[in-house]
Image (cartoon, rainbow, N blue to C red; front, side, top):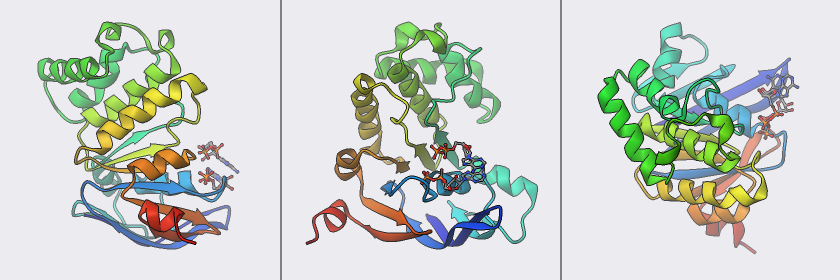
Length: 230
Ligand code: ADP
Ligand code: ADP
């Protein structure tokens, strides 16, 4: 369903990673772990083409992208298959909470405003933030903002949700509520790739863990295979 072949990314002629190959099935939850600076965030951004890889191919739900020859509209087609959760939430400061969620639904997914409001308010209710629908992001705690950002990504209903260190910017008291929401979503059929430093969390939610180091995925397997080997 998602297939990555020979993926390579360089910055200023320095290889960040090369010859990355993996496939991910629908509904799988993958965590990417590894030391800082090994290219985990870069890989995530290459998967939705926020960064364009230098080589290789990417296929998400039959939409293909080849870094060696592509048309600009193919970038958009891949983006429409993915949603992204940023470390710093990435909410629109000048939009209230419900409009943060409905904007992409109406402008990108083409859902009418009434239906979009219904989807957004149902989701806000499910995360206990319906009373914040007309508030602005700056009046919410970090944990609340990140839960809205995750909910916004979920509402878009894309084939692949990418989460880049979703708890790294949070004060410690907000981490758990965000991890709990991600865990709930992981139990649905949403396919997810999460870059995280939360090892216990990665163990508890992942179908597979990719360990990235030295420009490669050096190990991959189920949490037991990765953590419990002698
Ligand atoms: P990780 O997520 O594993 O911490 P990153 O993907 O953020 O790693 O970064 C991998 C390497 O690429 C780092 O050395 C970082 O400084 C470098 N890097 C990331 N983004 C850029 C960029 N836009 N331009 C140049 N170098 C970058
Ligand atoms: P993270 O690893 O959480 O993505 P970073 O601090 O590595 O955070 O990167 C933050 C932003 O800065 C990213 O957009 C990344 O592309 C950019 N960046 C990181 N390293 C470099 C670099 N050496 N040169 C230019 N941009 C960089």
